[in-house]
Amino acid sequence: MTGERILVIEDERRIAQFIERGLIYEGYRVFVAEDGISGLAYARDNPPDLVILDWMLPGLDGLEVCKRLRAASDVPILMLTAKDDIKDRVIGLDSGADDYLVKPFSVDELMARIRALFRRSTPNSKPEVLRFSDLTLDTGTHRAHRGPRAIDLTAKEYELLELFMRNPRQVLTRDVIFDRVWGYDFGGESNIIEVYVRYLRQKTEQENEPRLIHTVRGVGYVLRED
Ligand code: CA
Image 1 (cartoon, rainbow, N blue to C red):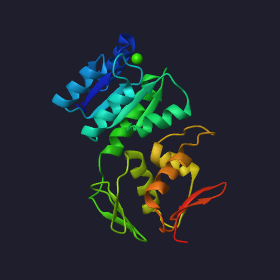
Image 2: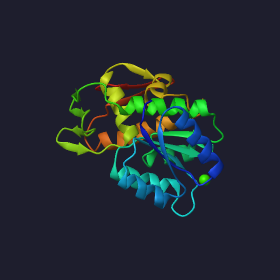
Image 3: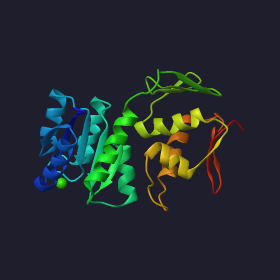
């Protein structure tokens, strides 16, 4: 028995029951909320270890629920959606979701994603401050600084920057980045890495600050000085 508490926010009863049965079978403790408001209220009173959140909910939609959950805690959030469109995935992940599952999905796929989220959210080492050039990244607080300037990062931006900071001057291929940051393949034509590199550059390169994350055309990216 693992006993981790999982909050499922899903209005379609059939899907909620399918998820609940699978989770209970694996030993998780489950609470199901049928809309965003009651889900948020439950999460506030009984902080869960992970949230499975449907995108399409009556009233408050999943994106808004995700933002409010994220504003209050770092709980891992797995979003469910019927929309299989990369733009929507980026919006979902940027709103603070940690991962994404497109309906219909198998119970095995759901469990694999949940295990991966729990693995990633469990720190396996003591916090440290990673340094490269004038960029620092605190693995405890998840905050970055460029020189004295503080930089706020979303969960995914942090993971991507941590990967670069742990592998300075090494070219990281798109496959490696997908595998290490997203934990699975987004599919050949996804531009999600480009999108997140752009976010990171906007935050880490203000005027007069030289570029640190360089594109290696046709291969991937590398953290290096000019
Ligand atoms: Ca729904």
